[in-house]
Length: 280
Image (tube, rainbow, N blue to C red; front, side, top):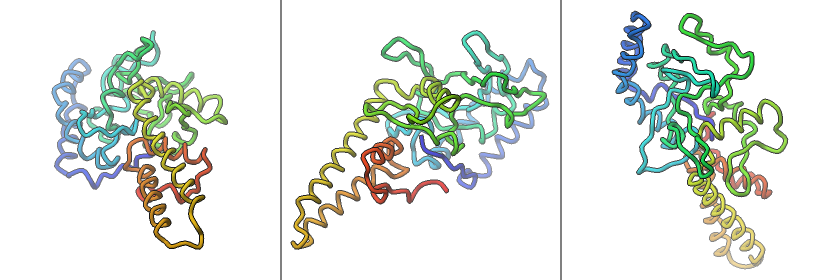
């Protein structure tokens, strides 16, 4: 998960205008008609998909997976219908007033957005989950205090949410060893609700991390074998390998945050990490 800087200028005005008109109509409807109206207008949020993809270089905002053959969902970060808080508690109205607000949209791989069963038989995936911390204020149609909520899920558009993310040697999404308490809890819960450690996703992440580690080891070995008084040909080879390694750390590369975390643990110099495409 890497910070996503949203860019409204990428979205055509006509797309935003259609969403605004739907919102205006929604505001006039009685409670009994809201869910049906929202359901009929699903094409509105789907029309934002390719523009959200441009903001993340075609990657899922939650998992950083990048599969050109896969379908992506436009997830409502705060659920547009019901909002599941715990196994026992679900708010039936959710955040209906945010159904057409593109600021509430996140581009999501289907494995993150939809419920799945992992290899241990545990149900993972976001679905309608949107838990809050204990004693958190809770927004509703009449009191839309979303900024006051203390939410459990990590949000890729909030840079500070990503501060303590880490990955273990097997490619599992986790929290850093110095992260405890509430931040660690939020990372653990997010890993389950977003399905970030589903086996296929973990394996794909691990494969990218392993390739980066092997490339780093090759660079280091070549540098040791290089004759400092020899010609420049071996150095040019090392430079090309460094460029290959840097490409795996770019914001547009799949699982680049995991590669960056791994390189830092391996003591790799910061110039091996390409931050040229990072959001400001």
